[in-house]
Image (cartoon, rainbow, N blue to C red):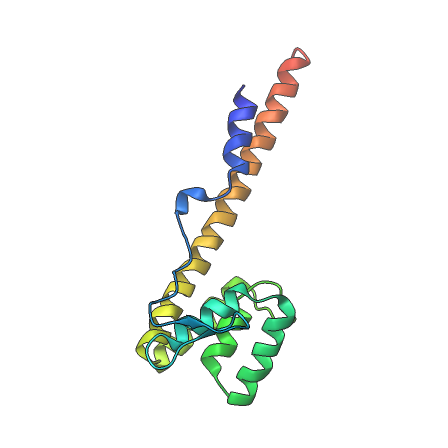
Length: 151
């Protein structure tokens, strides 16, 4: 019974964080190809939404475009996403994004960057909590084995 309770806690993930991606702002439109288009306010959010939903190959293309445009913000944001060939570790991503915040960004980019830094921090906390729970589960299993052997 105790093992199943701890196992359920360890495998439930980090649902307690209650994080959900931001919905696209009004003003965004979807063209016939399914691509979101936004002009002016909301452009960074629409771009980030596309990046989050993109396949690894599409993200690679977006990264090449960001490099051609010399957009340090887009490069750092794309490198913070898992699955890319140039993916940074969560800690390195947080550091790069914080450095951009110190240099200054447009309002919308700054808001999205702050959300991403917070998200990376929550994911890191979730991984640490999961590792701690797995360790506890291992200790409980060991104790129950020892109890079963009459020690």
